[in-house]
Length: 288
Image 1 (tube, helix red, strand yellow):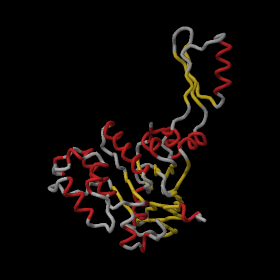
Image 2 (cartoon, helix red, strand yellow; image 1 turned 45 degrees about the vertical axis):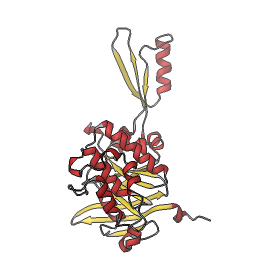
Image 3 (cartoon, helix red, strand yellow; image 1 turned 120 degrees about the vertical axis):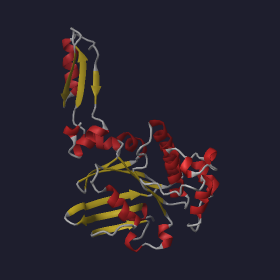
Image 4 (tube, one colour; image 1 turned 180 degrees about the vertical axis):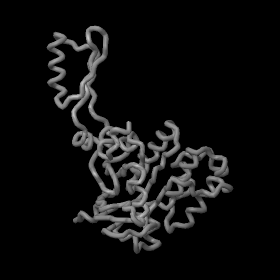
């Protein structure tokens, strides 16, 4: 019988980290199930990157319990590290090698790597396989970074702001890649500033503010739980558009229908978006 702990790729309880007088992570709890895409959202300085560094075993924690793939990252072995892939914001590929040479070189670091040619194809770089890294576009370099993150066949892939600087077309191609990896059973932890990206890719989300998790759940559930009311819009008889934010949109629409004796000109009913919820949870509503 599978236990709850065995179902979790990442299990974090009461995680804490300070830098001098600054508390970066202040009692974070996280449970990431095996095989899911989990989004970690929060403004700059909220503690996202520090949390990812601790999960990887690249930074010591000050308190709390952390288990990643069944082990404490603080004492993780080389074999344990080989089961985790990571893609940081900074590029890691040597500029003078070709794409193919780079992926083959990094494959040697792992006991059971994926086939380098297969990985180059997976990230959509077959046509640039013999191009030097320095000749790639920004989006192509990020795809190469992902190739290096997955060449070891990781059970867990950590993606820290992976599409920063992407144009919209490159971002959507990257989303297709993440869906493909998730479909293969890879557990993925994604930190991002892009709310559309989080809502599109993540099975569940955690919103972090001031070093704490302030909300966690499926994107639709977070909108339902923390999104208040709706905005009803219509057009008056004189052609002037009007709108009203209300906790009772059905009642508002019914009242308008009576006033207009049937059809309401230009009727719209807009529910809060994930972005609205995120800004409210992180205290940034007035920053829009």
